[in-house]
Image (tube, rainbow, N blue to C red):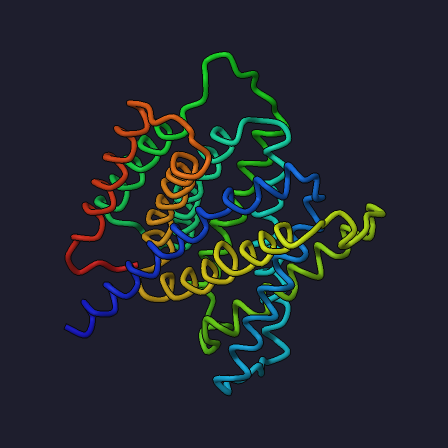
Length: 297
């Protein structure tokens, strides 16, 4: 019973991670239209999220303490998560958002392949769920037939997926940080990610906050920091600890599903037959995965 409760917690956290990360377009679209530089946006996104995470840890009297041997690994986690955000946002400059989202969702495949390399073989049901969700996301984000393929955009989107997959595997499998809470891991990953984006912004000679105008822009920045960053990273860390990196990756299908629903409800985008079929396939694949008995990572 306890094991089943742990699994249900992991699945719920994985779904929450996917849904919260899918809120990216709700806040980012307005900022991009307002010509806010990508790296300034990402710096404030990570810095504000780290501030809220640190405040939560202070109020709950949770320790910030880490061992010196853990710092390089936490820096790597910050770099990987930041690299995933950076790759996806930069890909939007070269290829349509739907295609970029589809390619970014290759990360469950990369996660499963890395797990195979670590001699942890995903179950047949997990592989079936991966294939089904890839097909579903492909239908949901199906680009028009007249788009041009840009190698730089494809490379950036795939790099985003690979970075995210490696982040998942490290959080789940590295014994050096197994004694750290999800809060501590998330806090330091955010700090190191924010430092990276500040460095890039200064290197490019851009103003840190000069392009952010008015309360709506700042509201979108705070929204980015809280929902698709802080909540997503926290629930992601919880889920990978409970059900493993591969299953958590499959549950990430709720990311593009949420993004599509936001497009329909907020931006008035059209609901097509392919989106409906894709959503049904994705939900079915997740139910198929979640109902597996005696699931192991």
